[in-house]
Amino acid sequence: MPLLTLFSAPKPFTNPHIALIQRNAIQSWTLLPDVEIILLGDEIGLSETAKEFNIKHIPDVQCNENGVPLISSMFEIARKNSKGELLCIVNADMILMPDFVECAKQAATLKDKFVSLSQRWDYDLTSPIDFSGDWASRLRSSVLRQNNLHRPAGSDFFLFPKSCYRDIPNFTIGRAGWDNWMIYKARREKWAVIDCTPSLMIVHQNHDYSHLPNAKPHYDHPETNENIRLAGGAANTRYRVLDATHQLRGGKLVRPPLTAARFSRKLELFLRALFFFLPQERIEEIAVPKRRKKRIQKLFGK
Image (cartoon, rainbow, N blue to C red; front, side, top):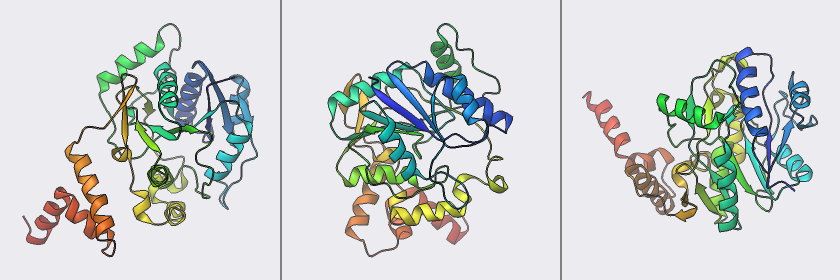
């Protein structure tokens, strides 16, 4: 029986660059030990890719009126069809390496209820990855040379036990807001939110947004507004890696270091609870010095 089940809803394989990076990502998943993969949806080229890599493919996913898969349906299908006790939704442009599986094993032995996530490394790539030999070490060295660790905003995978996330709203995949809600939900339920950034490297292959309607970024679509509504409002979609309760370091869970960014975030959450009657923007201005400074500069033209 596999340790965990990866599930994802890839984009159509019609755009050559999107097809390239998705094939790179999916092939990297097939090389992981103790992992099964489920690809969801009926996008062009997905069935053929699943057959090529001998991966389970389930096309019948519930979608919104624009044909975009719903997160709730993806979770339900993955839960019913998975063999592992851990589930992991992952974006189809993310390259995973063996350290990913090791972190999953460690987290599962340390907590019963948790969600694991991490910051990603952004990487420019325009050709297929050579997966021969020690490909992971070669890739890691190349990624470190580009040295683009993404800021702690947004998440590209969520790994959790089957017992968690049984009540998912009808979020739309590929739009903003739902990933932030995943962290909010875990914090509200008092599950451990584990930042695995110190213990693994996940690689995001950079791309544009030409595959989306009008080539607009994911946060600039009406479905993002619907995701925010379903999440219970904007405050519930502002959670990010900075809101992790633990970090995974050397196989142990430790408290995240109190950086300036984390301190500002903790202050923001405290003030929001204390002054719940104030507008969200006002709380952010009080909590985050940079925003206050920019506002003063704008007001006085300095």
